[in-house]
Length: 427
Image (tube, rainbow, N blue to C red; front, side, top):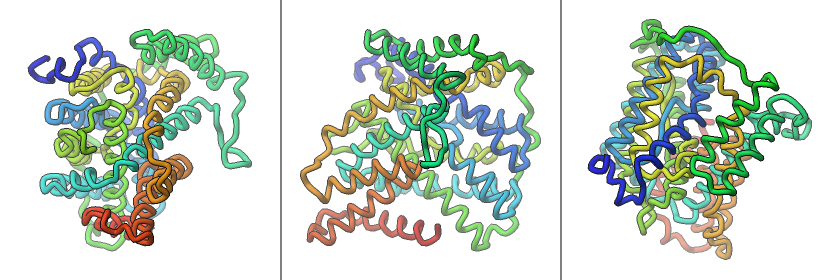
């Protein structure tokens, strides 16, 4: 393990890395159920998508572990699966086979863009203050997701409002938040993981946690494997679909990599991410293979920050996640039984850990402060990491131009601006 992952050089050990991996996995295990449910709405086979989800996540995360040696996990992305099912298939009228083909094309394009260092250049060109703001925005975003998963925050007359926290999942999550917070305050090793286990147990008498049951054998991939349809791939609609997949995945991954790398304190002195190109290959390969197996776009998961907060710093953390995804193929009833209320406290506290870079953002210089603020604000209020980066980057470029500081804008940032404007125009 030392030779493979250089643990001592990263000031970590096997126990810490494995624990971090287990924590990350448990906070993102919901995708094993949510993704098949969403794609089933598009007409896909639930069991086949479950297997495709676990396998694509394992393969992509293994690439991250061994090629990049970074503690980040990957799986089919939330938001991207919703776009796949509810926009491309149910609204635009394309078959799910055509949607899978668009994802496959996206994956191939990503592999090419990564091979020619284009995606790496985009990551490295983002200003330092914005990188810090991305970490803060992701922290608030993931905490917000935790609150929603538990029903503590719900839809309401004022867009969002406080849910009924006196019973059910919300009450269990609140109890779990207190328990997990106490463990964190006492600096107990594995506090987040222990909090998930404890909250799951607390949920039993409340009827929130229940045994899901079902078969322990992995469902067949046959209904979705290589189920491509290349009809209409040169239509304007299909070009827009592929571009949308590209855009959202690119900036979600960029944001997650920057945010988690900042929290893990592994950024280089110049603000670049070590092994960035290799990390970007992981989601490109994952997306391509995932489409072949039968699932939507694979991306780096913001929940990786849970493992980073537990001390994960190397690929051993992501290797642990990958192994657990493979094991999950045979333990689906167990993972289905972990309620959202049990992982909500961890997501909320990870949000706290992620916002620490806010103190290092330059709020005195308006051309830096305003884009940073918009990045954070839009990431949460628009429910999208990509949107936060988009409006933050555009405002940064415009402010630099109008305040006669254009020399600070790199050619790569100009290209990013063009891509962002295209996204706004195309919707």
